[in-house]
Image 1 (cartoon, rainbow over the protein chains, first blue to last red):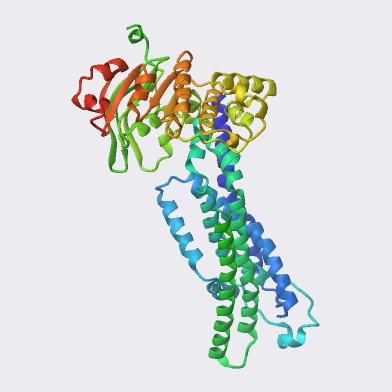
Image 2: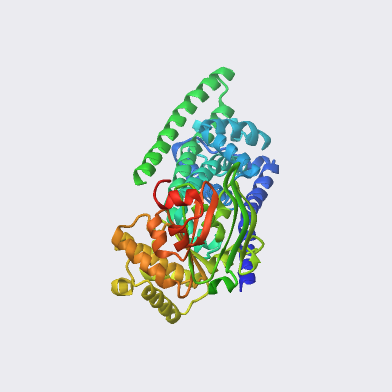
Length: 270
Length: 255
């Protein structure tokens, strides 16, 4: 009986530890394919109007919630519940998570432009025409390369926030509760599934919402910045840079105020 | 005299425990006999909780925890037993503060049996009723089994915690200051229950109340500064202590 339960536990543990790798794998294949793709017909930039940016936002939200938030939650569970408390890997990951969460979201935009987009090949607006004239002629159209670049950026941006909030949610479950369950002979898995997760669930959800608000506030910025960066001829480099800074500043203030709303909401609830 | 011939259920030899660099317990050696109440007394921070938590390996979760020494449970080494969950099914624990799960009274008591593999509702009904009757709580909660335990008084909650621990059917039950948050009337109830439970279980009782230890225990140990100063029959500890510090503690001049 005991041997069987431990074997089942080991299996569950193994599966749980495998989930991050599987998610990485699933995410990596299409992204890699898209990055390798240099077909000119595929290189179409979405015209910078409000509707397409909103749709872009929603699309990003969907894919990021599937990938980054899930990844973040799984990572946080692994860090908090399975890794030993004074493990060097845990210290390394936690310090990096702390650094990544404190970076303003606009810097991720620069990261996206400088790494993902430039490696993905040059993007051109069709026929070189200014985007304003193309607004009616181009319907909402996805560009796989641009999209994958964005999703990669958001994985970098949203995952640390989710890890942090989920860890805090798990820590909020008091030690006496865990000890009381352990003292009855429950395994780690049973403690987690039957007691910790039901108590921490609402906080994990709120953390996910907070991370999503961060992503939502920056998704439009990313594509906007890219189009300015790519299509502005006038003003030269400095003009573009000032424009870029102004937009970044505005959007980072917007997104930080949004996250503050969620923060205060969380503290009020607790 | 009879008890000394029996095989001890738990024997501890030269137990040393550290949290990081801080040594909590030094060279503890004693034996716990079956169906007796063994009490550990001593001032706060003398290592009582650490000691009793060692016995069902709850300290495994404490970071920087380190121990040297032998703990033998029914003749086998505790730290060599790979499965701590199986061990905790045999050595139950009741904590200072009653911590109940956020479900009904019935589910609270049935939980331990459920994770031990009892699934039929008839069996669970029997287990719940039997253990609530053992703790004397059955008459009070019979009609509200499906409601949450928050409406119960602290004393009733602690009794429910004991019933929950008993439902796993352990051999040893550890009490870590079970009356720390209770009023005198509820304390009397718990103490009476502890005496009754010796018919079926071996009990280990950590407390910082001298009189309480004198009332409930058969064997007592005095811990001071991480050392087991004196260990022996309760009567002897309280009426004729060998060590000067024990005498000072039981008479109230120390700690």
